[in-house]
Length: 585
Image 1 (spheres, rainbow, N blue to C red):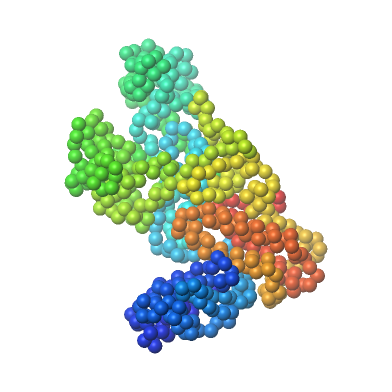
Image 2 (cartoon, helix red, strand yellow; image 1 turned 60 degrees about the horizontal axis):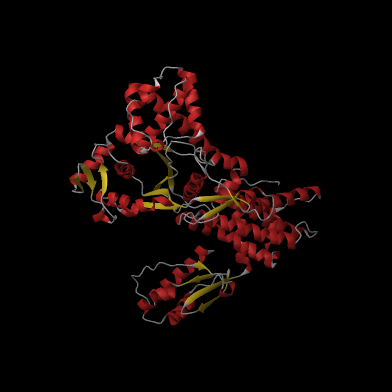
């Protein structure tokens, strides 16, 4: 209906142009929005306000001209002017009924569009270091990223989902060293564990498997490992210097075998992450390795390009990028004084690689604590000759767990976190995904585990799924009462749907394609979640106020036809969020 009204306005503009009231060369953009207050009609347009200057008339007078030039349409009850010159459209009841055959016809495709056809978008999300299992903090970014990607696909974009694997650098070396020290425990060597080592149970598991497979192949005496190593923090030393010395000693003693330990840790954790995300309904097209950037010379290539453009300089033995001149708060090191490239250098090369793959838009989903990193990445893109607007960075706030009124500790002294797997096992995939998506991603979020597992109307995911299940139960009752659903008869009698609750539901159903489009283009899945909650509320209210299996076959089938449409839209929305639509609860 929205498109029909736009067409009517376009025809009115053409008429005014032929009457020389408007310049014939004008091609105005027509905006039409649903009104928040139904007393102002169903749709409103500001076209008179935007073109009044061109028409050399005040907006109200020009609005009258537009209304006079509007072609008549059977679905439009009346048109009037509000405020300084807004044109309000009031639809008749027949226009509201149109949405039902549309939903029945398009079924699971209802709401999707080809708005983004021909455009390619990459969404990179989670990208947690493969140094341990995913925890509940990663979960919010994971669900948000997958929902953004799915919504973009629903409106026609070609979307690539990517995970950037930080499988190079110091943290991975700390992991490999931690695994080897735990492996030595399995061999009977007593080596004090570093303060900065990875302490989770998973490190023991990797070390034990390594020992089961290789026995004593990687064993070295404890005294050789610790000889002349600077003291750790617990002994009054510097924990950073201590762990770096341990890493260096590990590499020397193991030689070429070091890569075996390194790969054992990487493979174990990365496979765990992949399994965890897949079980959470999240799969990727690409797992992009940071080591690939090093092996292919991509980092050197990007730095050479920046140097040729005059954006690098040397200071105190290190190489710096002139990011301050491009909007960052200060210049950044890309090559340390020891010759090693920084994480930032890898990120520059990675984003250059993204650009070279030809995406129309690149979306990075980061934790809110990475906010300060955005200006330096934008600076790098600008220095590389790319439009900074090609990159969109979406921030995700951390989630805080509660069980009722009690705050749940996120980690323990042993290094164990509340993992994403634990969360899924406790509350289920559906509840976890729904709760993660209820708020804007950049807003603080309290996740109530007790509420998420409750079977009450206070639990929002239960409430929405229950609406779908309730509709299914009506059709079971229909069969028990030996009625049949005659959709053709229902379609012929849609005019009988005149109750206030029915009108409200019809208007809510018609909103779905618009909500989908806005949620996708604004990267806001919470808009779809909120819509589903409102649709469920409208249905439950309708259910409590009216009977569906009434004796009058015309009214009965009209109402059954309506609730089939409601069930379809609920299922479509939940499916987009990768949440089940149960038939019974």
